[in-house]
Image (cartoon, rainbow, N blue to C red; front, side, top):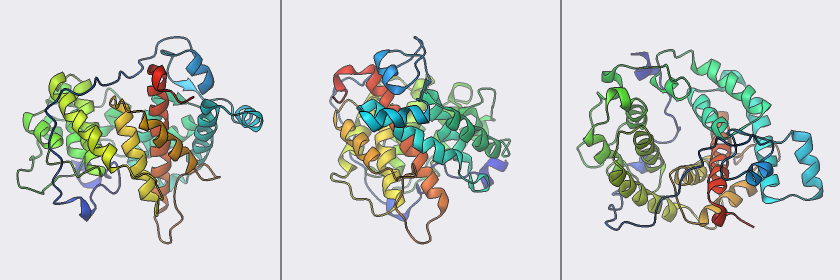
Amino acid sequence: MAFLSRCTVVFLVAWSGAAFGVTPAPLPTGAGQPLLTRAAGGGAPAHGLAAGIAAAPSPRFPVMLSPPDAIRQTCAQSCSVWDRLDLAMNRAAAWLSAFPTDELRFDAAVMLHHIRDTVDSDALTRAFDRARAVAEKDSDHPQRAFWNPAATAPAEHTAGWVVPTEPGRRVNVNRPLTEALHCRKNGWRPETTVYVCGPMRDNGGYETTHALWAIDIAFRRGCVDKATYERCVRAMHEELRAAQPAPFSPQATLDIDLYGERLLQNVMTGFADPVMNAWAATLMDLQQPDGSWGVATEGEPPYWRYHATAIGTWALAEWYRRMLASPALRPQ
């Protein structure tokens, strides 16, 4: 299958050598506090993120960003938290939509699809259309199912990989993600649950962020029971929380990328700690004047900055969605 040889790892640095041989924290035995509910939408349409907050808890998704000129004028006078977020996401969208097409990779379409599930704009639509055109060239890639529900894959290509049993050994992070994505039709194995909730984790790094994403996808598709899901997710929430640096002084673009992934996966899966607001504020503070996220480093692949910018935008979109459903947690 072409996917197996051509697939780009969804998040580029998940296979750093430092991730190996790390013993993850044990799963907690306590029930913990309830996980937060993600806003489902379905109400009135909203134009502008501040208007979405006014229509909370259930504006119609996606909430449209304000027109770029309008939000710049608003923030030149008085900029609320939501106006600032609107401006940041507008700037990121413009940067993403202008990135060279020949340097895009498959996972650009995955990230932009998820961003546009919550917020959208003309620039984000352009960025996604360009990224999807690149991704669709890999016509049998099973992760096309993220944006194309009709895309299918044989069970042997989604749930036929061998789950590692040797200590310290891991597989490509796409294996459990793809199994989760197609689990309604092709199944989700008990040993995959054991793997993503335990040996896959790497003390708050990229392996853990992807493990959390995989178990969440499987749960939302009805392939993992609630008790198992919540026990696993709470453990990873705390692991990612403990790994998030404070204060944060990134030395490289991938430092920002991982910071954004920790925020993204925690808020998307019901993390209930108000510290998420500080993480979101830090992320906005790190945005560059051109709208991107990154640290200028000699020899760095340009796509790393694209990835960090898409992750930062997606993380802030999910944080915004979390705030819509959780008024008590909103920053003042």
